[in-house]
Length: 190
Image 1 (cartoon, helix red, strand yellow):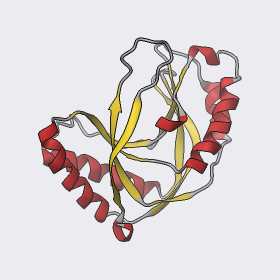
Image 2 (cartoon, helix red, strand yellow):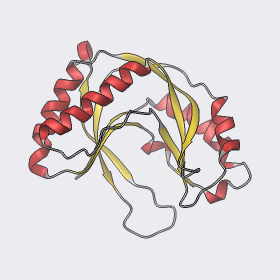
Image 3 (cartoon, helix red, strand yellow):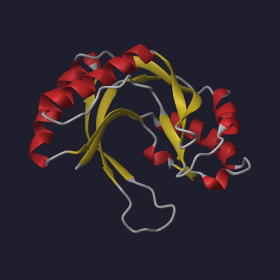
Image 4 (cartoon, helix red, strand yellow):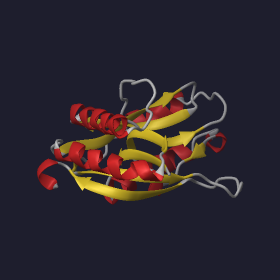
């Protein structure tokens, strides 16, 4: 299974971000970007890639423990940025970003202890990808719109293990499918 750990924003937060992404889609050149769909919007904490079925129970046990050691915290979607030269356009996070980073570190450590190869550790940059491009693009106008956006805060109260199924049809615009296969309450929420 292709898996990752994530924080999933509530529907009302997704709806707010959807309004600003609608504005972005009306900007010149927006058709050159591949826009992600709201059902797939999430803050990835740790990407695991292909995980063997027999490793999933141990990974789940360790993620449950990581969630239990993390207290609920406040977060909001705020601002934006890009990775590469406009290859990924994202919305950022505001609030207790330190707690989000700690949860990301714990999700990565859980995978390492479960035997999932994680490669080199990189400092976590909280982001929610809203669009991608196969080529370098000047996305500064899009980032400027995102920088003016501040969504409603919510309390992050769970950690999710998400399965990602990549498109297989070859149909242009087909989106990956995401399914939360497990969720654990944070700290007292569990």
